[in-house]
Length: 416
Image: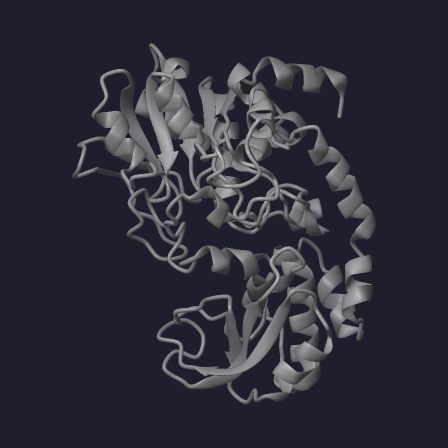
């Protein structure tokens, strides 16, 4: 990265971001020991919305944009005369969360507040910049709970909105929330640019180990052709080693098939089964924890357990999805049981499950649209598995590029 871009990034990031590391360092050894987590919105509101003073504000958010007492931030801001909230922007699944995967709520007026709600889903570049211009806002605020995986689309909504705000000449403010997977390390393959889609716009690792504010800084410093005037309002009381339950915050499903933090824990690996003919558990009460297909029996669980993957065990399981793949059919497969979160590597586990499924079930097949390549960020994982590689060999294939991403991300981290 060029020094000029780093200097520009520093100049356009709010002072509140720089205060995050000391706040976390001064905290006690664990949640409840003088270390109550305060989200970016908590800190923004406590400061009287000072960064938004004199601005017409639009918020990019969804049902996860809540306070500790589960009020939505849009409802809170709308009722507070210290902030001029004039618009809301809804991503995939919509602002109030009424749409399933691959859907949105469209342009409408919010019944609760009367605010105009604009649809951002599948919009980018100048088309999205035109939405910001039409809304009349001066500042775009982003507050959505991420789950830590490259192919979870909200981080690319963030990227697209930053790019569009720069094109429209708007300020951009990111309100931070925890990464439920912790922020300890980046894991998995790094996207190759020729495989860029809405499940991966830019070359980051499959599990990025960053918060949305940190990602915004990285996007601005590394990937946006024209950096946006960016401010980040950080959390206090969060450490990189914290899983979501350490936050004390309520969990609101960021999307219909992300019901619990435990789902988020396995998702960066088991979402890879979207690229196969197996069910990834959609249509069950344990999406991404249950995997299976017709014709699979206990041999898959035996093969997966034989890999000795750290922190997880696999149980032979049978289930009947109510929608998506194998709707209404009883199928066999496995359920993941994570017993040691600190040792568990979701991406390596996902690779091991793909390999063991392919070896133990003759019906295994990739989706014909090469979706697995879009999820993993290149054709390498698929071709190595097809060639008979074991998990160690597949993981070794991305080691060098992952080390490069880890070096890059280091300069954008905000918390100890």
